[in-house]
Length: 306
Image (cartoon, rainbow, N blue to C red):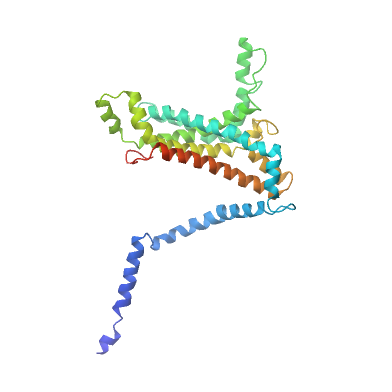
């Protein structure tokens, strides 16, 4: 009788075990504790600064909570930075994606020199923005190799202006953004089952038909994601717009407006408002691209990584 009284109750233990099983079925277990450091990192370095900036944009020195946003949209010198930035980032991102598709498509298979060629294509990642800008000035500047060649051959009478304007920034965005687009597209293409194209080939489909009807639909979701990432990278352009652009004129992008508001005018509310609008424009473009992706391809992604 005493042994029976000293034995711990089994019902609460079974209930706790059943509860752990039910939580594990929903993905809730002790392994979630491993996410705590990462969650704290994201909160401290991303979410908190973002929320602080949003709040600061509604706290101008005078004029009410929307004064900073009203100043941005009523001042053409500030408002036009949105169009200038989109005019640089959209074509650069589109060109990077379009140029990476045929190159990555040809490099799916194994051939001699593939590793060397891949290394050459991704080298700009290691150069950095400043070194890329310096290279553009030395090569495409008024006294650079390109203009000296044109002048010495008699093709032009004066140097072609390809730096310190729109084209200097555009070339910089293409050089720095292409390696990311190429690696992403190559990874998506590598995930598409090659037997699908071989099966279509046995049915008489040509190379263009196989690409258009099989590879491209499976690749479309990956292309949309690649475009979004390269667009965000290009939209946040800052050093290139100053080093090889015209920061007070044709290449006065929205990031320069935010910098000048914060560190030249010391108007932190306006700078925060510009940064918030910058993020909203990016989100609008990404939403449009992802919406196009959903309309273009709604089937199974089992044939590829898309």
